[in-house]
Image (tube, rainbow, N blue to C red; front, side, top):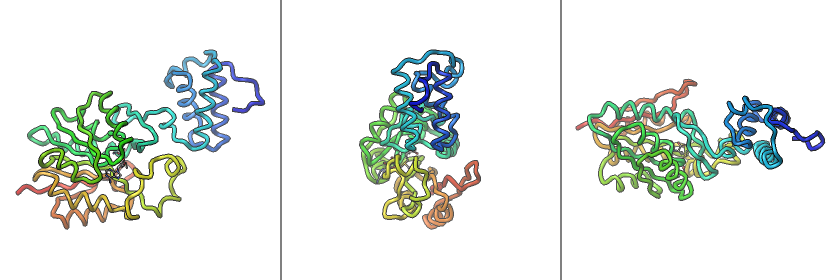
Length: 293
Ligand SMILES: C[S@@+](CC[C@H](N)C(=O)[O-])C[C@H]1O[C@@H](n2cnc3c(N)ncnc32)[C@H](O)[C@@H]1O
């Protein structure tokens, strides 16, 4: 917000100034983003902001709003500034230690949930690379009686995940570990459902990422090891028969270049595989079932 102009006196004036500032800084969806950030600065939600445009603002609120807008103009994602993002209809706290949950990841829940509902008994579920805990927590809440384990290599991410599960009332066992096998050891037997949204971005794709992602989300959550986008796909499919019981299934979120490899690797491992598209018709979720017998 420009210093030369008179200080905004009301929420409506602050909002108008915020829109103008973000648009000038080429922030996409400046109108929506301004509403979210100004509402957050005033301790309101968007609806109540729109109903309170004549509300006077004090200096503390103005300073907080300015801080949020400057951070956003430097391409910090709105979810980190707000400290939260919605996933599958629930609010997950996020910090710079975790990937911001994406709408396409909700498809992993859709398919894992539909599969698990058709099982005869409450499932044992594992989540590799849990981040904010969005997959593990959502499945624990959506699948009555499920036992859920979740692994991440990052202690800072696990702290966020644990707090989310606790606040949302989900019973999930979180573990620090650096490989899918940590889930098998913790569950003390085979899982019925293994889900993962592993890091799958190649180093060669770095420059094509939005600044919000490239400069703010954790590298550990984005980039596949050894410059190989299929690294975790290969590991998860390769470990599936060891980790998942006959009649169970693996669900893995895929990057846009992974669907052919996902099907080829799964079939070579003797799994019954298919890939589900997302709403943009991009092949997005591998479902690989472990045959019975
Ligand atoms: C793409 S993020 C997914 C986070 C969350 N599941 C989601 O869908 O929003 C991948 C996660 O894998 C974790 N990770 C990376 N390497 C790992 C490893 N070797 N072992 C366990 N977790 C790992 C990262 O810390 C990160 O939280």
